Length: 156
Image 1 (cartoon, rainbow, N blue to C red):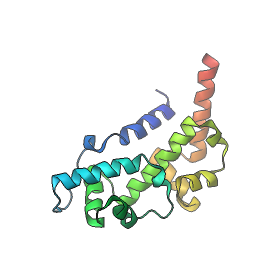
Image 2: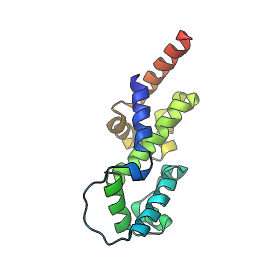
Image 3: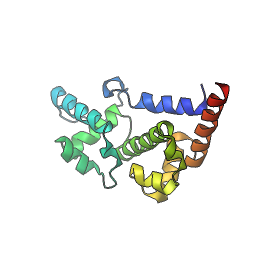
Image 4: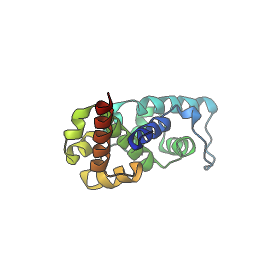
């Protein structure tokens, strides 16, 4: 499996249904199982939407849109996503742009500033967040995809 394929597989695995995620110990919050499942379902729908790319996304705004409060949402994210809110959102944003780069070749020609804008991250932090999550800079990632695609076409 090529490096880029492994990265894409990693992102796909990390976006599998929340019920399959490992749970992490966190403070006890009084929340019924039914309410927790309802929030998890709404969170899963959010993960599949383009709302993840909103620049002004906060835990408070997301909690309000999901019909819950910040405490419950924070607890659910830390227990089911093994991350704090900022890491969780950053990973969703980078996964979004990685999928675009991998599936829509025209994205590989865009400037890094546009990619940052497209996924809703500030340009000043986009490259470092991208590298932290993928292990590569955006330009190295794009180059790797292009090289892999060239090899596939050349072999046909």
